[in-house]
Amino acid sequence: MFYVPTLLMKIQNINDQVNFSYAFADYFVYYNSIF
Image (tube, rainbow, N blue to C red; front, side, top):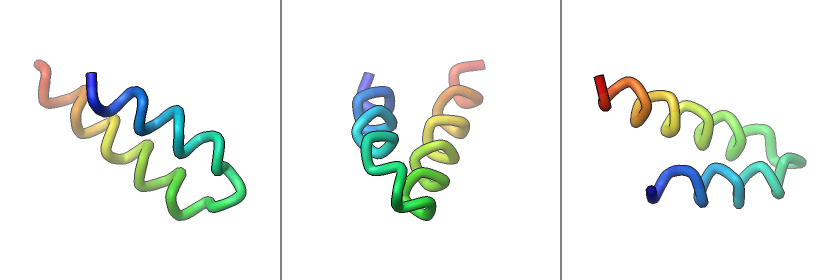
């Protein structure tokens, strides 16, 4: 569970849209790699 805390931390910095999109993309890739 490394990605979820990172995602939440980056959502707190939602002013930085670039970091948010990277966090979301990282989480999406991690979620898809489970299956």
